[in-house]
Amino acid sequence: MKNHLRMTAALALSFMGSALVPTLKADDWDRKTRITIDQSIDVQGTVLPSGSYVIKLLGSSDERTVEIFNAAENHLITTVLASPAYRLDPTGNSEFKFYDGAEGQPRALRTWFYPGDNVGFEFRSVPGQVGQSARRHTNPTTSVGGD
Image (cartoon, rainbow, N blue to C red):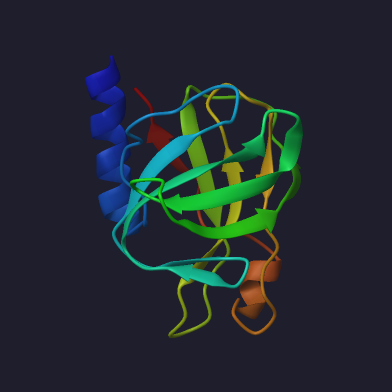
């Protein structure tokens, strides 16, 4: 079943040209999620070049402050304050949505949902970096399988 989910996610990513590949590890208390991106993305004004990263909450009692580290977790890249985002049906996968990017700009991260959660994190777009159409809708959902 896990292989089927991973294969489906990989196929969807290749068709959508998405920036994410399967999650390597995730922790419940801090929502720690390891991601690898194959193209640059923007997170509230910080551009992350392709590579591996760790996204997690600042602490177990803080439900809005998200930290992004390099893969080794020895360098904090950015800390952002996210707003709550909601979905009706939680999935067993991490889920990322993006704003449509302005031409020549990286796609901006819009929401991140941790596996099994109805409440996730919404990231604001930086003015001038997101195309007008992105204010009305997002690109299709990207679901990323977890181990």
